[in-house]
Amino acid sequence: MDKPLKILLVSSEAVPFAKVGGLADVAGSLPKALRRLGHDARLALPKYRQIHGAKFGLTKVLGSLLVPVGSDHELASIFGSVVEGMPIYLVSSNKYFSREEVYGYDDDGERFVFFCRAALEMLKALDWQPDVIHCNDWHAGIIPNWLETIYKDDPFFADTATVFTIHNLSYQGIFGPKLLEFADLADYGLIPHPKDGELSRVVVLMARGILFADVVNAVSEKYAQEILTPEYGERLDPILALRQDRLFGILNGLDYEVWNPATDREIAVNYDAASLDRRVENKLALQREAGLPLDPDILLVGMISRLADQKGFDILAEAIDSLLELDLQFVLLGTGEERYHRTFAKVAGKYQGQAAVFLKFDGALARLIYAGSDAFLMPSRFEPCGLGQLIAMRYGSVPIVRSIGGLADTVQSFDPTAGQGNGFAFSDYSEEALVAAVKRTLETYRRKDTWRTLMERGMRADFSWEVSARKYVELYHKALELKQVGRWQAGN
Image (tube, rainbow, N blue to C red):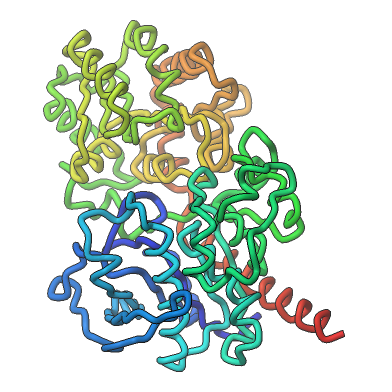
């Protein structure tokens, strides 16, 4: 357990290079935390058009890498960079990655299969043998499949274990059966789904990662349990059940160097848990930015989210009039489905002076919302982990959440009798439950000493990546142990 490990994290996105969702935050932060623990963690991702060599100090590591695709080969180049001491490998291909967006193309299956094959061939060309390949979401789901099939007898990978992390089970990488030819897996055929005939006729890259990895994990303990049920299993719960003995949950961490109100340059005034009186200046700055009356005493509820059903916007749309009848202000930042853009644009017009809605992405404003809001709302239908509630607590904003997935693992509803809890949670997915939780929040907010205790409790909690990284190291050793058991069983 004390031996330093060599770990390659394979991800379709990672900060600071390319970010679409929370996966990028994990892929950019976890390997840095692993290196601080003494492990040789490295990262591989595609070199998208927006990743400029001059900005990131890229150098060409491999000029022409032949990548097998079906019965042929295609060329890739490998660029390298070092971020805070961590080696990064970027797979370059004008054919697959020189595009405006990260995802959303008809050939996404081929694009990410090519990326994964290039990553494996790159390791051989560089003669760097990882102990563990950590594959993230469906984009890297083919790698565990390959290491048990076309690379099974390759001595280079004989001792390499695989870990497959599910960040969001609803995105599965479903493609037609022709993708198997491109992936050099046509001889192995499709994988029958235990209960779903439709999924038996297609390639589900998420399912392949689940079925072939040495261990599988989800990004919170609660979510790992939830996805075993039909309600949250997204039709893959029967496949997950087959691997239940190898399914674990590890909560995502938060990069406390990036998210730190004491040093954040984007907020109006810096502060920490010992200087909370200074925080009110950020609230006033947020009210000015949002065009709301300057009032340090009114409850200001913030929300930063993708506007979608998953994030609870269907029940929020039903509840918003009841919420804005209460003595509070509301600030929303985010983009998403057009129907919710229309709904909340009308809310901003109807409740001028009480509600402000910013239908855009604005990193600086997001930080000001974390630093200036009193409470932070996340009424999600499902939430694998959630980073918003962790950031909010780090900045002293008390979370109001639906008790689901990672939100249930991190936010315990305040119990005024016992004096325990760090936020406000509700279970039923309904307008009534949401409104009731906000009313409980408002009642507690009026007790200033109690509220300050909740703020300090959230700010002093440790949701750092160091805690989660140690759990991942344990998981890597578990994967290596199971890999060896599998080899022994195969040999006997």
